[in-house]
Each structure stands twice: as C-alpha cells, then as structure tokens.
Amino acid sequence: MATVLAPESDPPVDTTRARQPDATGFIERDGVRVFWERYGEGAPTLLLMPTWSLFHSRHWKFQIPYLARLFRVVTFDGRGNGRSDRPEESAAYADTEYVADALAVLEATDTHRAVVIGMSMGAGYALRLAAEHPDRVLGAVFIGATIPILDRDPATPEIQVDPSFEEPPTDDSDWGTYYNANYWRRDYPGFAAWFVGEKVFTEPHSTKQIDDGIGWALETDADTLVTLEYGSYLSPPEDWEREPADGRALLFARRVRCPALVIHGDDDHISRWAVGERLARELHAPVLTIAGGGHAPQARWPVLVDRAIRDFVRGLEVSP
Image (cartoon, rainbow, N blue to C red; front, side, top):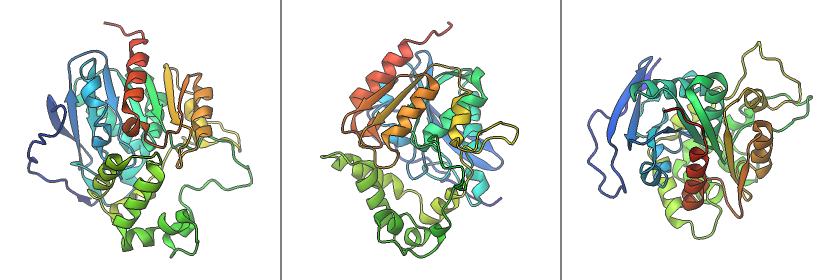
C-alpha cells in the first residue's frame, strides 16, 4: 500500500493557540502514521474523534482549552489530513481503520477507557467504536451525526458512492455540480469554499469559522479526498442480522450500551435534524437541539456544546 507521509519536521509552535498540548506523538499501523495530542490531567479522558478528513483535529479548537481544564483530553488528526499520513488506497480510509487508529491512540496515551466524542462522520467512527469495543467507552457524544440511520425503501440498492460521482457534472443543483470528483480535481479550492461556506456553516456571521474550515480543507487535496470517498463506512459484519429497510447505522446504535448524548442543529444542511433525533431515540439518549444551528455547532456554538459535554461527562459514573 502506497502512502504519502506526513512531514517529518516539527512545525513551529502556534502561539495563537489558547492551550498547547502537554504531550504529542505518532502511532503507526500498517505503515500509516497518525499524529495525536494530549491535554490536561483530569479524569476521565475525553477522546475527540476525527471527522471527514476535509478537516483535521483543529476543528476541536474551541473544545480543547475549556475541557482540558476539567478533564484529560486526547485528539488525533484523521488519516488524510493534518500531520497524519495520506494513504493512496481507499481501503486505508475505511471506518474500521479510524477506529483501529483510535484504539492505538488510547494505548499510546495510557488510556484504558474514554468518553468518545465525534462530529459528522466522526460520529459514525465513535458509534462503531462504542458498539464494537464497549470495554473502552465510558460514554459517547454525537454532534451533527452524518450516518445512514433513517429507514429506506427496501427496493432501493444501498450504495455508498453514487456512480455519477466520477462523471462530469450534468446536474444543475449545487450538490450535483460541486460534490463531484471531476469538480474536485478541477477546482478543489472552489469545492472547499462551497462546502464549508454554504453547507457546513449556514449560520449568519460565521466568517471566522468559514475561514478556518477552508484553511483546514486546503491542507489536504482533491486526490486524497476522492480516494477517501470510497472507503467503507459503517458496513456491518456479514453475520449481523438486519432488516431490508434498516439504515446501516441502526445495527451499530442498537449495540451501544454506554450513556450517550446527541447534539444536532435544526438547520443542518448536510445531515438533517431527523438523523440526530432517530439516533437519540435508538440510543435512548437525550438530544440537544440547537435552534438555527448548522452542521458544526462545536465550532459555531462552542459555549453551548462545551457546557453540554461538561454536564454529560460529570453525570457519568466513573470508577476511580
């Protein structure tokens, strides 16, 4: 498996950060290096999961300083962006690989159990981690979850990537035009500006969040994102029983036994509020609905999100 390596040299210290990490390092699996950071010394540990690798771990920039004053916080750059490697085969971007990376990061940071927190696709990674490794997960928080959990027409084939994704755009809609491999390769900055500025941050006065998001997106590239698009996502094992109309994520949600919290904006243009509501129902979890909130409330509404995470974690029964 060919892999594009992350830079070897350490970047200069970012003096604009509200808090510097207490420890950093790399884990390596099958020749792919993944960069992690640890903050704080409190208990329990919060594992902030990566999301779609359009963004790296700095999308948690508003959570880390506050939560690290109360708890121990671990985060890592998802393969495909940041200081982690960029494998050149789609299989390396399966959700099972992100989960395995998370387990390796827990080992590297001497973490036996953690509260896992995921946003968007990262909520899917957190869901699989909680369902398949319950001994490592104290609780789970799902923010703007982008997961296939709603019922579907049994006659409709369940595909992960639309075949038109690789064809030149023929659709006048914005999704048909911009969410397309040809467009990404032709004008990746244009895609990043559209996706971040018009779909992720729909709230007024989001200039800083949009600028940050576009900057993070430009730290990866179109070819990496196209390769990543074909990585398997929430495909259940063959021996799991399922109904034809089940969304894939239902099988994972029904296996989660830890306490959970769902946070979802009611103006999410990527994963509609009904996804969060259904996920909360299946998990028997409360849902915090952010009125007017878009897809990334942890960045646009950080005080609400940080306090909700704080209160959820404090309510857990944690063994000393």
